[in-house]
Image (cartoon, rainbow, N blue to C red; front, side):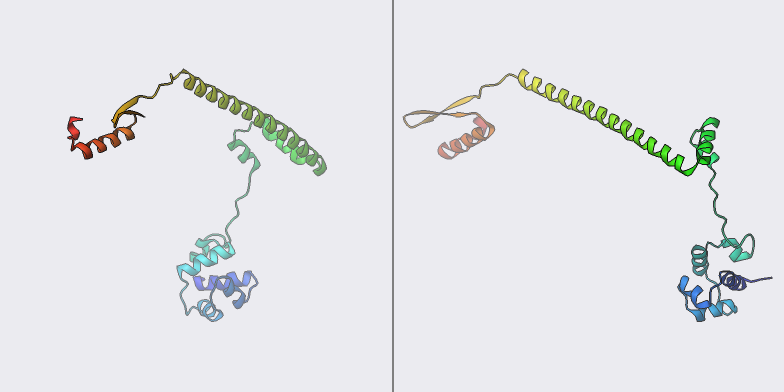
Length: 194
């Protein structure tokens, strides 16, 4: 019965690679590979993973000798793929007929489909654009209406005593705070009484 070390050697020979070539592909030195193949070195998990990834080797075969040497590639099934996407029997039949057509005929069909797709895409984009413009226009009109409906308020004017009369300022939070500070400084006025 073959050991894992023997299977590494069998694999290398089936790939028609020298020890140097095989070692370079999995980043180990030729001397280290020689020791593995002769059973002097253990085949580590890291080396097993590298071999399996690099050469598409079935890990179970490499470790235990069970199964095929190489991983079986997944085969693509058009029927399965189409059915998974909800295709009916007639859809699948149409696909098969299409694939059996002459290559030049298929190119012509694809070209025609592209034209139809681009036209429909442009129609969709234009419809999307015009509906977006309508939404923007509607929002703009709503905003204008709200602004027009809002009554314009006249500013409140405060008369402040000054030497020989009064001066007027617009009442804002800032002007009220400034007036309060001035009164506190000049008259040592209690702010709580203001």
